Length: 219
Image (cartoon, rainbow, N blue to C red):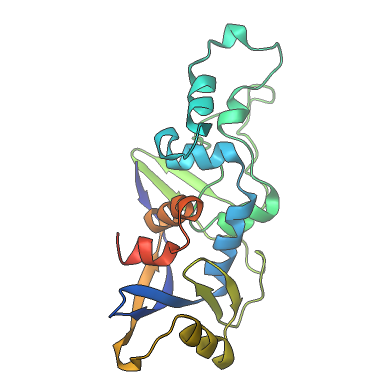
């Protein structure tokens, strides 16, 4: 499914061109809100977004088991589909809205009608708005003032996704900790953070301590 997102974010990377590694990124409130929202995504949502084959361990097989299980074996009243597309809690939904949909939002809410009331199902709480069309998914911004961190300031995101307010002291500390000796080899690069990059960050966050380097330098 192709994805068109009008809310592509940007981050400025400081890259050690000799070591081919990201030292840290300068990120906005919106980018940090997205990163923090990953902590609140249910396992089922993560598996749905990445695909069962991309999951480390055996979670993917659990997911496939629920997918393939004949519904006649389900306990009466049990919502098996809720395991495959669990609802995201409102704070996470608000912050994840610009980049990743929640599982409920990924359903075709523009055409599906609620069987009990005959109308369209309510939009997911927290400000996520997803519009589906043939072969596309449009993700709209979360509500202003939502998310997790304050706006009007810049945050530092380290390669392992550690986040802190940006400051001169914190920048120097990273340079010292990573033994950067050639300041002339440090290069600024502005990268886009859209749906594709969001999925890569989500996947790498489970597997790597060098997430930004893996996603933006190693592809």
